[in-house]
Image (tube, rainbow, N blue to C red; front, side, top):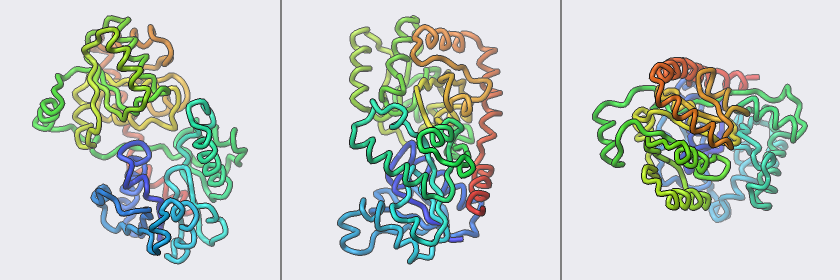
Length: 369
């Protein structure tokens, strides 16, 4: 089978949708090498080695007008190219498929990660909401199969777009295989020295934006008189200035911000932390939760939505708006070694359910309907 992917995110997003796209392409090409995998990218990647599996075929725009307008090529002109390339199935990995693709004779699959822009429209600019909604609705309407990354996302697709539930399959996400093994002592020491850290910190990974509630974590540390350092890894948005303002006003000197952390350093950073906290209001799944569980790190996360699906029975669950509850949960895990060990062991067992072979098998079953 010749399978085409929208590979823009795989080549140009270092986290989130990029990680998902790279993982799916890697899982499939590794476990099902008999297929051909064609990666459509609107421009030449700066780091082509981000996708190194054998048998992958990158494809870029050819005509001068496609090169001049790569976004139009990806969203409107790609369908014709797919037919020309004899693609049997096209998978839109990040909430969209090219407009007009329903007029061509090939199978189509789209992964819908979340509909945050519809559930919480106040977090988005109007024009962005309109674009995201149009792309997602078209994709859900015309794709032959829809992959939802959680039961929460599946329910939202049905609720907002009135899509037939039989058309939607849940395939949970996995995490990068780099998290499957324990980092060497040498690598851990290298990472500690690189970022000037001491093991045993509280760890947070994610874009620093309002819905992920980092400010409430910082408030909980302050009001709970928690002296364990907090290490934050994530891209900054204007919300980060609000968080830093609170830190400065309350003289919190134990918070460290790290940006542009390469993927190869993340397993060590997780593994040297005492706990991982992820109090987001809404996600499509929450890959960092799995990264922490594979790293044998206890997890605190939100008690509703997709988070219990990712975190399992032995993560700690909180209301992300309840400062006192967040503080109590942090202190309880830091102070109770027996609880920590139970969370680590059972959390790791839960993470093993999200392995790359099962994800690849589930994906191929959908491709072969």
